[in-house]
Length: 414
Image (cartoon, rainbow, N blue to C red; front, side):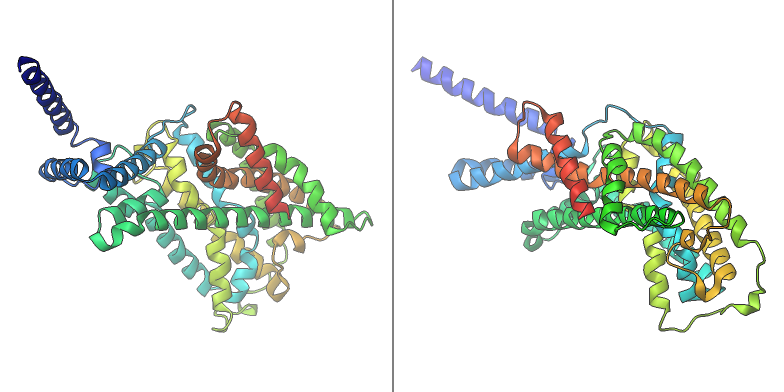
């Protein structure tokens, strides 16, 4: 009898210790991810869940699976990076992620929007992009659930559904996977465009030497440097490559703007406002030119001091002001110089007799290859944890990750 009482007391002691530990950690990230909004709600929610688990084995399994799933989100979002980036490194990656093929197509965009209407619309698009990139929803979720860092895009959507009305909570995982799928498709789509740009540039240069190259051969040639650069796994090391790429892109843009400034026609020779039927084409190209929105949260989370990202003079505002200014200037000068003859990329308007044409195209190709590396970082960061979770643990995870990167590069080249 005494033994039974002792065991009963020990069992009660264990339960009380569990409850004390639960109460002690009710405000941490794990409790937050279990759809808890305040300490009082945490206590009641924990008690009711414990009762349901003890009373129903099926319910216990479901709750355990949900808890493991939410803890897996926590491990993904709050996994610290081994190579945190500085303010300057993040700014370099920010510029590189937004300055790519899209900026070279802005001359054609301004043709579809009009010489004077297009700069206004571009600035409005830039302001909307900056506002959205400040990820107010992510910050709200962080404050509401008392998280240490801003959750990523997919996690923000999932946590929003989990803490929303009861009838929508069961769809949280579906929408999380949907957002991740859209991001992967978008980023790999950018990479496909970069491959096409590099291959077309190779064809253009070789055509000046009377060498006609099939597009498939040029894609295979461009795949070699892209494959090598895609194996870089750290944003800190990508930033070093991006710094060189930014210099190359800047040199290329300066030379293009210099050529566009030669023999400029009067402003009146260009349409101030294009026909309304072509303005949707302007929006499509302009939105594409702001290419780095999917990089915002990864860049912020990789920083040594993430608070420096969203301050008034932080990485986001400073970087986007520079990017928007370059986009407006390039589009304005490109359309003013070439008019209706402006092509989808301003490099295609450079004649062979222009001495710096080959330098410009070579610089742009290198810059775009580095941009590929940066944009490629996002889908790998999304897909690799899923591959590791489904097929792991691996004896050689590095080789498996390299295999995933190679497969994704081949997909973008097909």
